[in-house]
Image 1 (tube, one colour):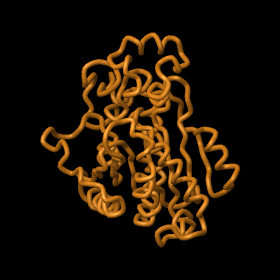
Image 2 (cartoon, one colour):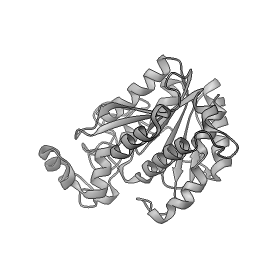
Image 3 (cartoon, rainbow, N blue to C red):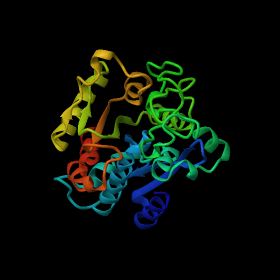
Image 4 (cartoon, rainbow, N blue to C red):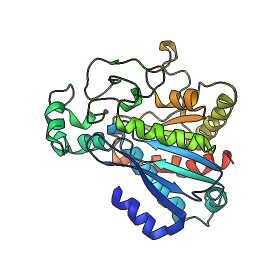
Length: 293
């Protein structure tokens, strides 16, 4: 992915920029890839792959980035990207959990730091590395945000569900929160799209006032484009999720936010599903950005 980002910059010049917004626990770069005018007065943020085994979301985001850059002056579903991205830049964090992806794809042996490897091998789920969701400290990054947070929720450090010792305890969470705050403070942030896998569902409930209204607009468009089912009633009986990034964005950053769950069946989502996922999502970020103009 890192090589691809550098190649995209070399190929498309001023249409695309990137910055490193932080480092993972094991020292991997956390990238923010920016399509369009970096000085635009509006921005849309796309975050994917908070959960390690959901790395097909990275493939989707990187494919979207290349597709929009390649067709910058051509029509995509009735919209020409240059006419949108010069007015609203899109910031992509395509891989929010690179250490977790490394574990899911290659096993704990691929973690660089010996101390982390030693600790990880003792954690629940270590013997089923392909299903790993957490980061390299056994913290679930979608339970670690500063919203409805409960310390040490979800049992103990392991492959999934553990919220961490404190809100935003993990460098990956800090990096994303930092980018969100930066975009909010410079008054450009208009919305957030969060990609997960799996289930072919769109989440768009919650929020209040303008945030709720704008989230619903994004949600309705996403469902129309993808044909995904509604996730609005999912888990509603148990209340808000502990440390959810989407809740954090809506309640603390005060920005509209939708979550899309791509794919069906097991996770990691098999590559055979990518063509179907692509057809349903190829224009989504472009059209959500246009909506927010």
